Length: 455
Image (cartoon, rainbow, N blue to C red; front, side):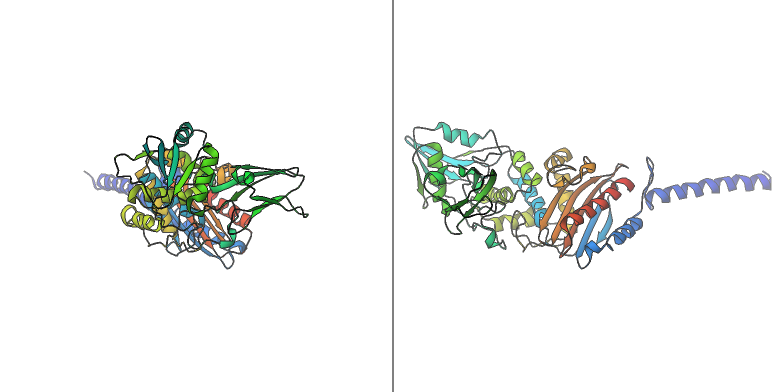
């Protein structure tokens, strides 16, 4: 072979090797996609996020962001992602994780045992009983059909207070903060309609027993309740107003009275005795599909469903209702690999004491997809234009996520499906902001749209 031919042959080989090296570098290090072309690299994404954070909306606020690419199995953004924030209703992602693992296909309904002319029942913390959200309820149908026997209500061992730690005491009459209880009925709220100087209530028990008073002083139509008792004050007006207001549970005595009124039969209350799930004569009776409860919990961020879900899990596992013990079990046994140990105190995120990091939330979101089918998880979370994500209609089918809101705290965490075929897991937590909540939410939407379009 001549010197020219020899040089030409090896020059071509060197060019081929060089091109292969460049291609591999592009695919591995710079994020090129063989299907869609170049993908924006991590450095560019971090630069864009820092530009966004210069917006005056974030002045004085603390921001933590964690974004992970499930498709390429790597972290994309970790901006203060190990810092603790109050996640507000993003706490419900951890409650959902517990419920999916421990409750099975259905809510727990009731425990019951019978002896000839007496039916003994016990609550299991199921929040779906007689709730208008559910058209078909198996445990309720069972109770309605049992017309001939006296009923005796027992309470399980319950170590929970009616409110969670760190809740706002003066929100006692707000519909987002009903009392927690062992036998919830009607969601532990009174469903009221005020119209033309009249009032309708579901359940009707409080109206029928003289626990409603009228205040005819001028003012907007509303219903209030005295802090320590079930006495409801109605302010009438010409306009029709629909209101939900929590009632006091009174350790189960009110539940027995409501059951008696609803079933039109005697219901006795015995606070000293319990049914044991280990007794062969005691049976569980489920009420509604668990996913139907979880979907409502996540779509409208239902605090009551979240609290009672933890309580149902506790009773199913320990025969005792103890949310603090349940939380510790989940952290120790189901989520031992969390990046930072959280401070988790309730099921709903109402508490100001909860503290999680963005990395923690991304971790549990990944675990949800690894432990359960993707289609199931996505069906339980609102997408753009639905539920609490109604402000992002253009992201329908691209985002499946959970919002979180408390005064001066905002959270948004979930999944993004990008136009280049990547699945991103993200958590954005903002603390101590003083700007407009709506504008802040819109700005978060801008970030997510950019990721969907460019990554």
